[in-house]
Length: 120
Length: 120
DNA sequence: CCGTATCCGATCCGATACTG
DNA sequence: CAGTATCGGATCGGATACGG
Image (cartoon, rainbow over all chains, first blue to last red; front, side, top):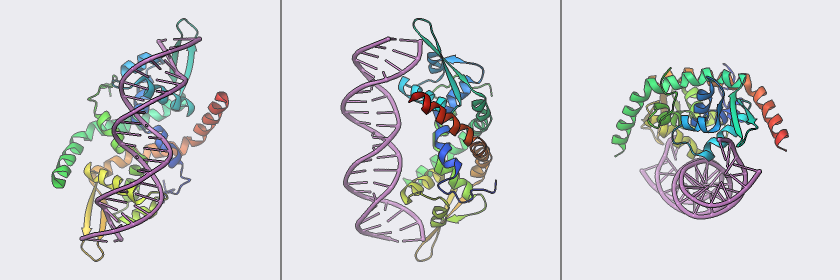
């Protein structure tokens, strides 16, 4: 990866990173890996997310092509979200990052305590 | 990774992901991989970042233990930032994500165009 | 050179209410 | 069930000014 040692404005990471690398998006994609799921089911898997936040997140992911949305014409209507191949391909990098947070949270928290102590 | 299929509030990723996975943090860490660097040098490598944003980002990274800060007692003072071992360990997952953005930006942009057309 | 302090508009975000 | 609409508070982010 020799490109972009200097991060100029046009760098792809500048246009994508913010969009894909947020907490809710990572959770949604992870939850959808085993199979399609309906709105409220997804919501139940993500403790603390509001309906608004989840809706916005799903829209963004759909727009970026990471998942697809399918309306089931029942009454009341159901909506099923399914991860796309593109979304699947993002899952591996996400898993690595998730793994990192699990492995290093303790050390990070230790650093934070030390830093806050110095500052006080 | 069988843990956390249901993302409860206490999940480590919830406490860390937002902190580490933002655009500026990724750029700073990447820039610092080859070696320590001074404030304005870092700034020059990240087109469009403001002094305030960079300062905040560096503080956060320092607090989380991903880099260290060293004051050089000259006049005027210099400050050198160096990536820590912990920061280095985060670089691999970041690189994977960065690679993904390079490989898939085109497809994402295509999806966005299609989505926006449908919406219009 | 490397910050901190302040102001201020833009934006996010949760809570709430309402609809097909 | 799965949204949309709206509102007010909190937060962000840039611009600017100033200090060690």
